[in-house]
Amino acid sequence: FKPILEGLTMAQNKVPANRGQISGLGQKMKAGLTALGVALGITQITAASFGTLLAAFNSAYGVYNSARSSRRSASDLFHSKEVDLINWLKVVRGILTGDFGDYWNTMWAQAGFVQPSTAIPRRLQDRIALAVKLAQFFTTSPSYEVADRNVTAAKATELFDAIVAAQDSLQTANVALATASDALATAQTALVAKMRALIQILTATLGKDDSRWHAFGLNIPSAKTTPAAPAGLRAAGLGSGCGGWGKGRGRA
Image 1 (spheres, helix red, strand yellow):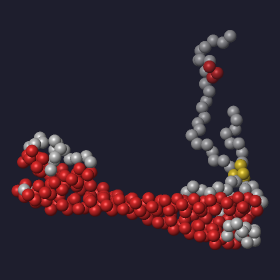
Image 2: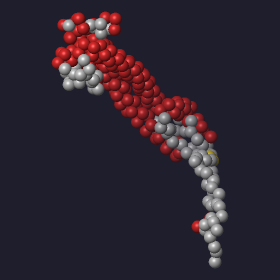
Image 3: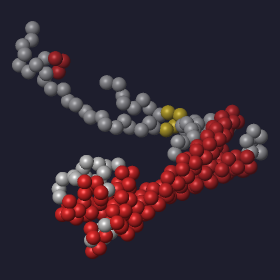
């Protein structure tokens, strides 16, 4: 059998994909340019120009994270209002069943269940529309209201207003997140391109064993690293049937 590990490999310098790691490496690269850029004769990329790209990326990353948090909060609020509406509609349906019966009829239609069914609509917009119709029904037919169960025109209007406001907030949060994501992608592309360019410059400027690579947050290329051990391997023993011979099979 061939050895699983082939031995040591040369250290590599690559820009990470993780945004937090990009920011961390960027900070070290900027520090390296500030300390050694002039001494190494690196004129293509200055600490100031690199710092501008890094600051733009960090700012865009912060805005993106804030927008993502806001979107999550808006989504949680929207779903809670949706649950409130569904639960209320179930209560209303249960109470109206006592007046209108179990099967759909014209009375159910007058109350707002316009589909030939007493089921709660599956689509959100249909549930919202039902809340509006129920508000109108209880307004014109207050005898069907049950105040102690919140089956009233006022409650229908309250739930409608709440879910529409939450829906609008979620839509606004979605737009803000998409805008922040686009801005972050643009800033990240610019910074990563500059980071890769700096690595290329350092490759042409520093020796493979130069310790100054560390000043830029990078590996010394000549350093040896051990490949990660492969996962999921399992040793299997060979029984007496090895080689295709079955147990008890005769031999020539």
